[in-house]
Image (cartoon, rainbow, N blue to C red):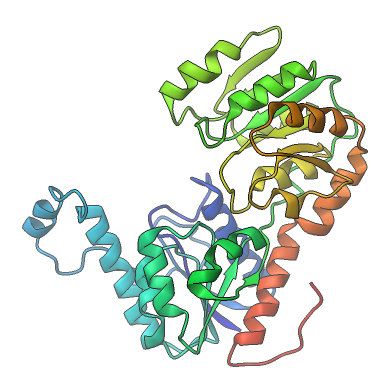
Length: 363
């Protein structure tokens, strides 16, 4: 197939990745290319030079004084204008092109607003909740005949259903070869990783670990310093719980492999949660709140679900995870969380909606 992928163009699709969205887009484009498809990636110009990168016009012929004036507007600042123009340019290019499928992975309102203009079938993948700007564009796109929605979890698509109708679930994948299996862990050691902020609620993980008699290593950027100082810092003690900083992937791998349990304490509806897949790939069982996609990723062989916000129930889940087999966790990652599974699922979906038909492969 000849496939166009529209990425989030704010950040490069290249290592080191700014976040999970960039990593997933890179993995998908690489995987599709390795399977013999021709993939054009419409992305930030500093993206991976090994990919086909059509040029994207960020500013066009907008005069400098226009961008300067827009920077003083609290809504339509220069970055928003540049992004709007860039996505409009991409859609104009695609309107004149001949692709079997266009994959809109941008999470921006402009591509969604203009899908009816494209001659090719379009698949938009939802990675985020129905934020207002994006939501209104999705409502516009839902009645376009050649447009299809996918989402990274069933729970996320359920939140979108009243705006878009039914969509197709295609779960995210992680590189399980990089997150290598560790058959043994350090006794009574737990790990937590993520942005340190209220919605991720690491203070609840710290409290549950203490109640379970576990030493918890806490890692991640301090996205909310005030929250860290007021809720997290008072629970830290190098003899019980320790903040180990914002880690590289390699550093995080060591902590993940050493952990007897990974604690997932998010209290907002996580669209997916790649860190769950990373933990399972290492063989580390996950104690998680019933939040977002966690109950879809975890089963009884690899994790335990607690009622959201309850430290007592999260403590129970932590203790239950200590009894699970690490090899079963790795098997769950291999069966459910791999990049290969994700690429195959997208490949099958693109063939299904694309202009050219060919036999589907098993997911």
